[in-house]
Image 1 (cartoon, rainbow, N blue to C red):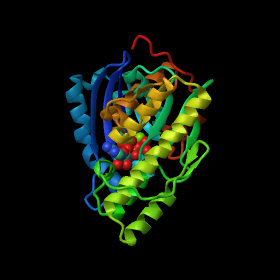
Image 2: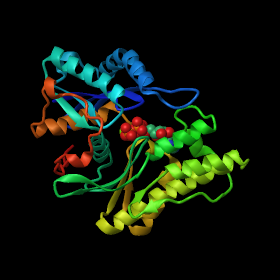
Image 3: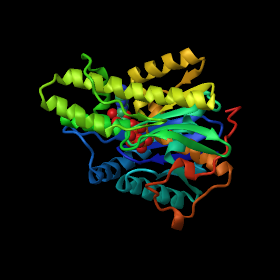
Image 4: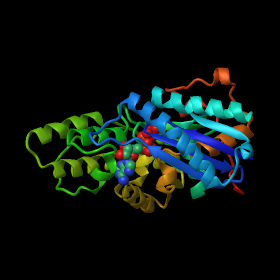
Length: 328
Ligand SMILES: Nc1ncnc2c1ncn2[C@@H]1O[C@H](COP(=O)(O)OP(=O)(O)OP(=O)(O)O)[C@@H](O)[C@H]1O
Ligand SMILES: [Mg+2]
């Protein structure tokens, strides 16, 4: 079986083509960028509509298959930004109708996890999911993925983007901020049990810059504080769950600093650290295609009439038994 998956929860429009034996035949994407910073929902919708035909064509070319080889269409049904999700949903419905193949609405965070398990070989890890919109510490318990800890306000990536906008960096600012070196200044460290919060740190960072502190020092300290907070809650979750593996997913998994901090903590605890390559850790279509296959194997399809987007759909709303990927 071959599935085509469409991702469009936020700034990335992605199309992936994956076979049921776990082969990623294509993974093509085009992400919205802006020089001035930030992303407005309307601009995302316009971007996705414009790039969609080319991205779909490139995916078929990369996979070297024809349209009639597709058995299933999956799309990111949520959570995400409504206007962006709507474009991917509309294109997925159309393709499934034209090809006369079933449609599967995929939960985006579960897709991050399942593609990670497929390519890293992690079996039942503690999952550290850090992206623009999401910051969650997740573990599989009984029949679902449970959120053990999460941001109480904005995702870490969005906190980076806010600070990036303040200092005039282009969007996405994360990769630029990750490379800035500076000296330590005190910023608020906000961990509450297994939850964390980032808004106050951004506000204080902005205040410090307004008071004339060196931007490099503020940015470097901001990254140090936030990434240490993420590492602390991850370690606490490992202690509670006694999981022996930790898997880092989401766009911020590309951060060498975050990977390093988590790796050192895992080594200290005798825990195996893994993370997919950045092309599969950030938003991408392959993860949607693969998760659509897993959902299809359990008989989960969605009728066109019920295929509306679900912008606030949490992963713990879903019954999702741990799937044995042995053999993929
Ligand atoms: N090297 C890096 N260091 C730090 N942050 C990074 C790096 N590379 C990318 N990022 C950040 O990752 C975030 C994007 O993550 P992702 O591609 O998962 O998209 P998303 O729309 O935020 O996803 P989700 O819908 O899952 O929240 C951006 O905030 C970006 O700045
Ligand atoms: Mg994502």
